[in-house]
Length: 548
Image 1 (cartoon, rainbow, N blue to C red):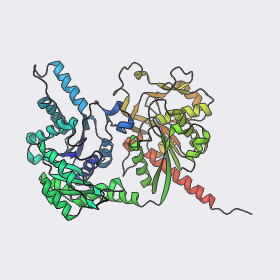
Image 2: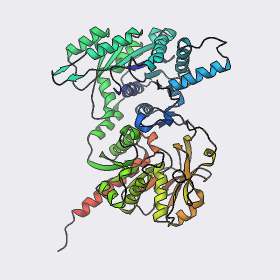
Image 3: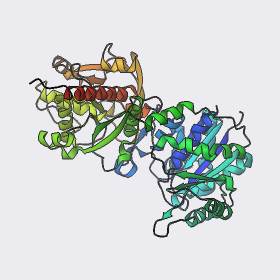
């Protein structure tokens, strides 16, 4: 297509409006027309990255192939545009300020007073240009986190305002996502909050080209015309984004509303017919399941579902592929204080997932959950920390290592079946220092993992400091645990399974980061396929007549 076109997505009125989903949906629609798309997220917080932030505050930390700890919106981007992103695709205010200060300390600014304008804004613009240069997309969609009017977001808004004049009006498009609330008491849809939001945006020099309106009720013609008139946007550029039960239906709704058409017209780019057949078929599978599964997710951060966002989406992807709707049963691992309580909480579930996490809190509960899955032959998948607690449980209750634990939880324990990796022991900083990013994993032939993947070597993304202690491999193997995936040199144990269990598989990596709605991850699909088979078998046996 030639030079990159830039689409900037901002938000107003309230946070959590779904700017990331709008950006990802637009990316999907442009990809469906054959264009190369990449998406860049600007996060205004001062943290260098979200790696050290509490999941309760920030939600999930998404990890890219090249080892960047990023905002969870990058997970949405990857899932929607089916493209592996990199550290170039997430920029925080902390990173910008850190780099500007480093340049000042080196003397790069030749003694000038370092200011927000031009130095911070120039650094932001340079990140946009660097991403466009290295990624070479036809369209670079840039989402600015937060809402218009946030103090910390002002440098980013000023930077994109300037950017339009740097690269030309014809190469930039501004989309503003805003809320159009419905007041039940008066029975009215109100446009005034959106008007004020756009006025705030215009006061800093940005006139949106397209308005995407989040609403729980359809917008009437009068509301659309009022929004167009008072925000100086063409009526056909007022896009309705009504609440959807199925997340992956949003691109299809945005296509009907003409979002991509308006962006392409604004940028004077050819608007071809999109190929959305496969996406439509996937959405249809999600909406028309033939059966249902109850899946327990036992974690430490269940108070905020965004902490396990990719896990939830991966279960949905896999569920659609096996024709099942997924009902999540959240289990706070701290509540699983003993076998009896665990059984009461887990009774009736069709599958169990124990996801990742850090720290000692709730660990004994996770171990009890794993024990329930193992002894009751419930299909089980452990992720990262979930694999480590699975090994601890097996070591204690099967291999007779009754004091087995992780060095993370018991530094001076005498049976550390999980230990800190050697290259992690002398690190002094926490941020960005774990084993991060994509690494190869070799699979044991004829194992459940190898059968699920259909190959002998896979690439998976990691985020951890601890690994299975090789000093205990023989004891655990002799007791019946299979290490079915390892690093190429066989030094790091990456996947475990129990051959005699219907599906007891756990991995040191995070498979949820590589699942796609139209291409579910093999381990999640394997888990739910076995769960479906087990449920059908149980149902069939229950229906058999009893001999008198």
